[in-house]
Length: 117
Image (cartoon, rainbow, N blue to C red; front, side):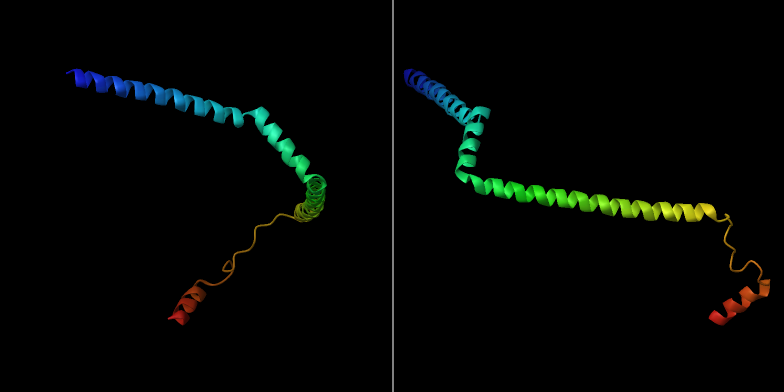
């Protein structure tokens, strides 16, 4: 019975110390991934990159500006075409399209069906 109590005590002590150790590791890791640390790392990387990062940033900015202006001009062209089509439709009289068999004699349909066979 004493042996069992000894080993229960050893297990409890190992579990408690392991829990404390894991908590400390997690706390340290969270400090390294915290906002202050991320800003510091980003600043270091940016200062190392230097002017090449600025050049890349400028190129990306110019490409975005070009894409936006091209999109606007295409949008204006399409909008003009749609307005023109709308105005053309609105100007003309509205009529229902004639059915192809509206004036055809009744036996013409049977002759068409017979020709298909």
